[in-house]
Amino acid sequence: MTKHYSKNISPDSITGSIMALEGVKNIIVLINGPMGCKFYHSSTSEFLTIRPILYVPGEDDNEKKPVSNTFLNNYFFMQPRVPCTYLDGYDYVYGTLPKIKDAIIYLRDNIDFDIMAIINSPGACLIGDNPSLLAKELLDIPVVVIESPGLSEDFDDGYKKASNLLLDSILTNEKIKNITHKRPLVNILGLSIYDLYHEGNKAELMNIFTKMDIDTGCFLCMESSLEDIKKIPNADLNIVLYPERSLETAQKLKEAYGTDFYVCDCLPIGFDAIEKMVKDLCELLKSKNYEIEENLVKQEAEKSRAKAWYYINQTFLRYGKPKGVYFALEGNWSQIYSYSKFFMDYLGMLPECLSLVGPENEILEEKTKELLSKHAQKEEVFKDVFKDIQESKAELVFGNANTIASLKLNKHIFCGIEIALPGMGYTDIIPKAHFGFKGSLFLIEQVLNGLMSNL
Image 1 (tube, rainbow, N blue to C red):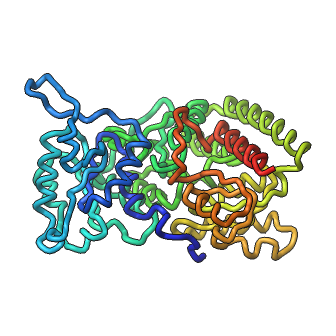
Image 2: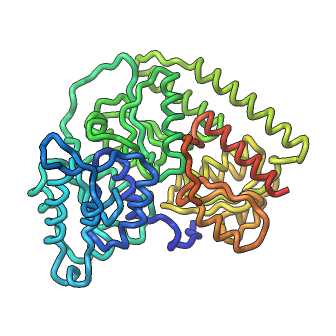
Image 3: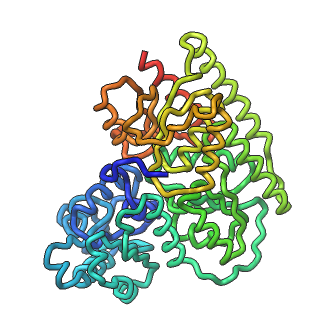
């Protein structure tokens, strides 16, 4: 499929790498590049995660002082996350290693951190310096080095590269001893702090697993610590949410440690998707001789369905919606298939435009086409659904805020609902979600209120 979107407003590979690594606790992600490469990523990471205030040593060893403006001006430039080496014109001629060395020594001597990551900017990767050897000489902690950020590749490609290199820097390929658990232990692969509602999505997944008597180990690159990552091989199962990001990671862990993995049919958005994931996990883990609780999840599913039906039915009786409403959706294949399936199967809505932002995935593309065929009353009804979202005339538009804002210039009446970042700047003090039962109800709430705003 042709990628129909404007590259200049779509998160790319370097953003994927930075946000994957910024999702690790107590890490320093150093950009080897000019200040322009850090400002957006530093600001975004600071906004998306609540981190402890950085401290510098005081005169007394037992005294700690908050970082000063002077401290922040060194590599941080008044931003608490994602320092950079502030390369300029001469560095591209004479090399960047001196500035990398100064930055590493400064950070090492002034900040406590468990992992360091160094990411070359697109310009710096053309110089040919090797910061990996230098970092390993100066530090005795795990070091992740991304020599090329991927240039024109997609966010998911950058995330995949960074998360795999992170595991390579921390884990060994030695076979672990058989560890038995009273309850099954699973890792979650594919989530990112750059996902909209990432905190609420994580909480909803943990709620489901807790009800099933399943322990969650590491949410890789989603507020995971060094110790969490070290324990990844101990799990009974790795759960892949986004194949574009983490299927390769799960395969590598299977090869290295023999850990089985489960690839979700789609994201846990909508009641059918959640119930299928729960059913599949029960079968897999029961085959490993674990007792799995299903009743609590079934009870919550029944309550959620009843609540959703009441409000959907009331809206349909009054306004004849949401059934038959056309929607446009922009995202990667996991998002396109998962949201479309929920909107079409459960709400009776129809796709007017599906626009890919991300790498190709033949399996999810085929699933999406099968979904369209199932709902097509005529053979050609969805023939032109895969197109540039800027051509959309749909009543509901799902995408990031940049896409929604640009579509406003087309001056047709629609409601935009964010499903990805960048966002409009709304501050979510109370965590929200699109995953799980509460997330599905919230998404229905957004759809119903969005339709009413167009009346």
